Length: 80
Image (cartoon, rainbow, N blue to C red; front, side, top):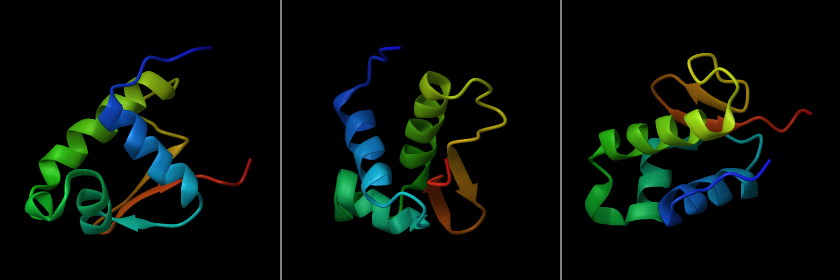
């Protein structure tokens, strides 16, 4: 079904899709989506990942697609 994404959510999802299966660090994602000024502001990323999960996951609290790699970053599952 169709999902409405903000421009930032779209860019974040696009980045995850391009690198599907690979772990993207918090810093890498922040730099590519928001720029170098946001590299030290991981809360911005957490909020947007949470928003994406609520729009894309059946159970956002138990994500199956956008996986958290604790202390490192996020990974979009590519093993479907």
